[in-house]
Length: 338
Image (cartoon, rainbow, N blue to C red; front, side, top):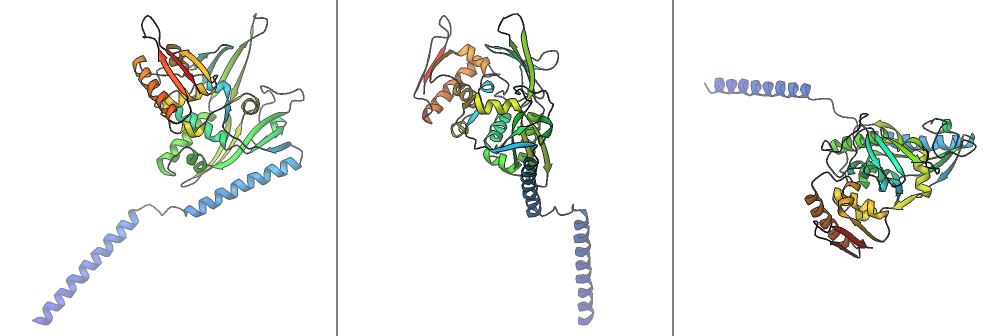
């Protein structure tokens, strides 16, 4: 009897083990295949960057262009600090009216312009500033010989049709590190989408002529971009347009990245604009609000303005600030020194 019980118990145990084995096999079959080794993709990215650098050397040796190293700092085109194309709002909440071409219009003291392409926010401006800080090389030569070939018609070209661009090759994680993103996953996709929006943006400018009887216009892009995406990272080739390169070299404002990183989106928009203004400056707040593209009510703007001024003073960027006026008979006016 004892032997029979032992045999039955053995059969039950074997049946249970067999069932467990079948369940484990089925579970393994349902799982997706294991991703490629992260180290392998990182190695491939580094090889791609090294190959790009070697190609630059070879093309320079062939006489296609001249290459010069760049050591970028906090410079940012002054023109971009003074127009409200990077809005301090979340994506999808853009309330600014668009024209019949779905373009965002803006007006400055020298003329007018339009921004064509996807809506841009402070998040995208962070991406652009991060790319500016990662620039590595200045190339000068014929437009068609650039790493990303350009049209022969370019703004600010000189008489012999040579143009200059700024280029860099880096990883997406390099950009994310500057922007304080966690690497990989959803953050990687968000930052890559931001890069694509910048590449799809076209700015249209109309400048009034000196004789005041007409105007002269042009269109330009911020940059051209190419990418290779891997499991947890991407290899990027960024080429700033000739006009952007000229602004980086000759018409720029220093935007303190350390201070900017500590501010809210509204704070970043205010800080970027004020960086291009005199150290002793005053402006009506009703005029300042649309200058940075603020989307909420005036009451909210005044609250955010006061919070930002206090923060920038605590960070040591402002020496003094005050808001005068009642907002009724006497309009509010911001006065500051830094």
